[in-house]
Image (cartoon, rainbow, N blue to C red; front, side, top):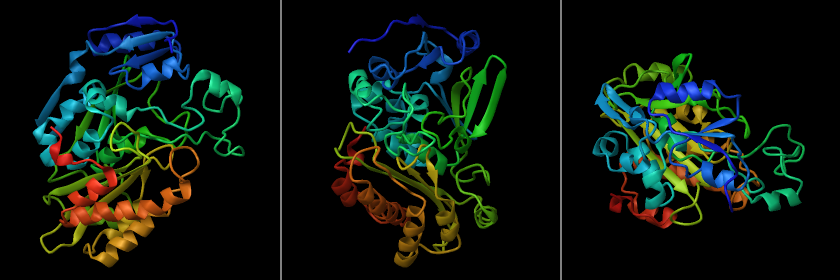
Amino acid sequence: MRLPWFRYLAPRTLADAAAVLAGEAPGDAMLLAGGTDLLPNMKRRQQVPRVVVGLRGVSELRRAANGNGMRLGAGLTLTDLVRDSRIRQSYPALWQAAAQVATPHLRNMATIGGNICLDTRCNYYDQNYEWRKAIDFCMKKDGEICWVAPGSDICLAVSSTDTAPALLALGARVRLVSSHGERDLPIADLYRNDGIRYLTRRPDEILAEILLDPPTGISPGAGAASGPAVQEASRPASGLPLASTYWKLRRRGAFDFPVLGVAAAARIDPAGTVREARIVLGAVASRPLVCAAAAEYLVGKQLTDVTIAETAERAAEPAKPMDNTDFVYHWRKRVTREFVGYALRELRGEDMSATRLRTARKDLTAIL
């Protein structure tokens, strides 16, 4: 498949890149970082920008600073994250998520910003142009019907980013830059549950940076969990280390997008009581799905088998997988409970390496 015709621009600064976006009509210009998502989409004519703005030459986007937490430039590759011992030690969910994306070759090119902004996916959308034309296209591109649910008035393509659920569980924020200024927002506010308009980022904005609070003290309310119980519990939790984990289900042990992602983070006091918790599901909706009710239930309790089972049940309730990705969707609903349970057992301190190897066919300890 060949790329469509486009004009390529390669600004050297973030300000210049923002100026290019500001000078183009909305949708006419798209950003290119690693290109592992955009270029295949362009070959399938899913995205046909008139102007492609390359960001590889913008050094501001490739910085990682460790002070009060971490500041990660959106242009850092996933390999950069995997090789960073600070992320592996302090933010294990993010490290595990980045380590399980695609293959080493793609992680060498793909960026954290690109994975956060990854296009939503669907069995009826991720096909070549001729295949999509044969079914009269779909709502996401060139058509009027969502073939997943023909009666739906919105597109049901799913969010398939691995790093976003982990970052939501970690309470991350993002910095968006445009020629009109910049704004910081919780990463949870970057997404909406719409397969077409899945990002709240404006067409003239660039995702420049990811901001992570120190693992021993994140800001109450900054992340995915919400509700009085969680917010109240987060006050005495200050100073407790944040344990986190990410679990991924896919058909193959490598290369595949997630069919399910589970990110969990918790602060557990010396007595074993959960003082703060966040649980986020990926690949079950058009945005990372925050399981606030399950997290609230967990706060103030110990991670017993009974508590884990009930929390997993509550986390699976809002998950409504549909016929838009791999595996039978009824089974995907059931397996959500299992994977939430795996994540919570790992937070409890169990050695889950054998289960990871069985379910994901990947030994994370061997990844460098």
